[in-house]
Length: 447
Image (cartoon, rainbow, N blue to C red):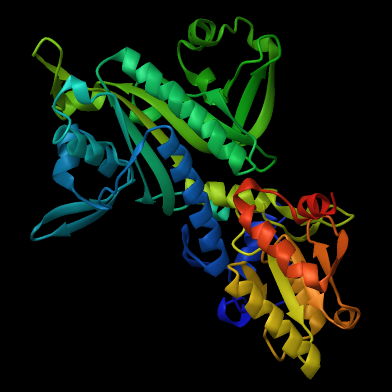
């Protein structure tokens, strides 16, 4: 892809937000655009990064036997009347509504109602259970206090999954499988997110855990019990029965042993039981030929905020700990290498274009900075902010038959023979999903 085509705003970065530096950089360079408070558009590269995150989520959930579906974003309010939650959401001001002469509708803040309606029309027998449906799509909530750019918005991408089972045993099995899937998903995304005890809140149900990524800019406080090793959200201390609850569920008897850490919530899993099945009359025929309510679980991942955390965790710092660039993980980045040709030298420019076109023809994802009126220095600065793991200036080394490639995360420079360069990049592309670096591939070639 040519850099002139991706809508990058080349500018000097000013007053970078110290709390959310990478997202602020994305805003300043036009890679993310704010349309209103909490409403954002994704530019070319962040959008492709999000698609790669979506792909990893889908691959893992499919591996664990979940079935991908797509539920409507615009939903009739009658669904919410059926569950009994419509008035509550209206009174709290959470729901965006669309009132028409053809009926009243809402933009989905969550999907319990829609998925129950979907499931009860096709899951009629215990022989079909348990089953888990999932989707990835936009949700809409009228957040009064939007913050952290993509971390808390009014419109956001979310993966939400729902399990339907016969009884608590089915629910326990699906819940534990989903927990394993989440651990694998966040591990593949390079995020150290761990499950911690949490309150079910307005969604209801009996048990829930949040997947928390420890971070200095987190808005949640996670409490760790030094004796048991258990962790939970500090909001559990607000429960009237918190001492009894912590002892029964987590074996924590003395809250004086608790240590607090800041974290960002990336996912949440719930045991809903039969709450929604009862309110919406969602039933199946059990082994005895009788009608019985489904036992449900609910599982969510905030894809937008996961994208934000991937970017913030990919920040490259200078010697003073300040923002210096971004280097995305190999398996998530849309482009592996940023090529900067010397356009003022006809022969070198011609050779660089030929190498770029050869890489593209071989399916290697690279960026080629074809902008004619921008200096080499400015292009090098831009190469540090688009997230490619590697950058290469195609200059004087071409005369010696070599190409110098710099690792954007470490600053390490590799000198590669021109005849091996394309072969190595092809190998890097083929191993992209495995998150194998160019340095490792070069070692393997040497061996």
